[in-house]
Amino acid sequence: MRPNSEALFERSQRLIPGGVNSPVRAFRSVGGTPVFFERAQGAWMWDVDGNRYIDYIGSWGPAILGHADPSVLAAVERAAKNGLTFGAPTAGELRLAEAIAAAMPSIESIRLVSSGTEATMSAVRVARGFTGRSRIVKFEGCYHGHGDSLLVKAGSGALTLGQPSSAGVPPELAQHTLVLAYNDVEQAERTFREIGDTIAAVIVEPIAGNMNMVLPQPGFLQALRDGCTRHGSVLIFDEVMTGFRVAAGGAQALHGITPDLTTLGKVVGGGLPLGAFGGRRDVMACVAPTGPVYQAGTLSGNPVAVAAGLATLEQVLQPGFFARLETTTREVCEAFIAAGRRHGVALSAQSVGGMFGLYFSSSPPTDFAQVMQTDGQRFNAFFHQMLARGVYLAPSAYEAGFVSITHSAQDIADTAAAADAALAATHR
Image 1 (cartoon, one colour):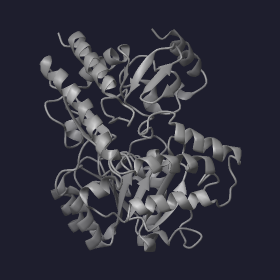
Image 2 (image 1 turned 180 degrees about the vertical axis):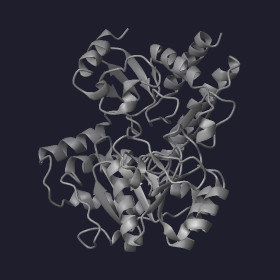
Image 3 (image 1 turned 60 degrees about the vertical axis):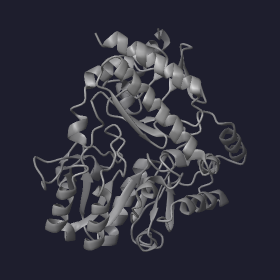
Image 4 (image 1 turned 135 degrees about the vertical axis):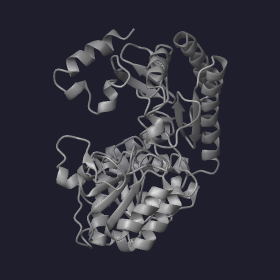
């Protein structure tokens, strides 16, 4: 029972749109009342009614060390005692930039910002300024923040111009964005052949995480790299979710593809609002004050957020960290798959690094169309059964899940037991 969450949600809806400050938190996809949380530690969170949950959201990715990591909290406390913000350069900004660049060799120059959305919208602007072109290519099912140029859905057919996916986005702006199918190599190559010289940038999640987790198929990312190189377009890897989450060098290191620009967020801020975009030195030279592309932010490089990010990366970049995390995440997936088999339910899962996908289908999807064919209604029922048993999954069938280094063997065993009971309750 969650009477306090219900009361808070009722009050919140009177003042905050939908009662939440980010739409997916509202539980509209799964139904019911969102859980209001009070505290978190390691792999667990406690709601305002005192219920404890094993957390597989991790604040949508940043909590790779688990919640309230002592070293991160200590770093934040030290930084906060010296002042919350200066609006001026600090040595910490440089140390974080150096740490990121050392882990991701594609980043020769970097600008810190305050969110993933700010990073992606800035990267697109830089790409347009560098190339002198307007057209952007993105992929169906990939989310890159709520910047106007990127809130665009597919048109009625291949090579048709995009349509706004949100009110408030002018159609004439959306028409500069072309939306293609994720993992469709032939369509991407045909697009480059037909209009490649007009494309300013191709932006892609190298591992998609906003239509559940979808892995790139062999040759897909390489086709984008080859097309951008051939036509002088800027290849942007949106690693806001995957950066320092799937590997020390991000998805680009796993797949051996070098983008021109990379956007980062989530893990790099250690749980505080921080993002970044960076890449080739000649492209980044376009950014003010050295170049004509204007980008600024009063709180960019905030010293407290930088301290949290540095303390997080110090642990994440230690040898063996991702091997341990990958093993734990794979075991979580295996627990879900085994439960599905025991109950004769079409349930599949896959993982990479500390990120996983859970699907009510016989095999993991490879594009947006296949994602939409998974059994969303069955997921919704499963979600509420798991929540009642103290396991907090993403409140949507179309979001990736996240594991922290603090998830224990007991947490996985408890998750497996909850999955068994949840499937028994829903599969009749």
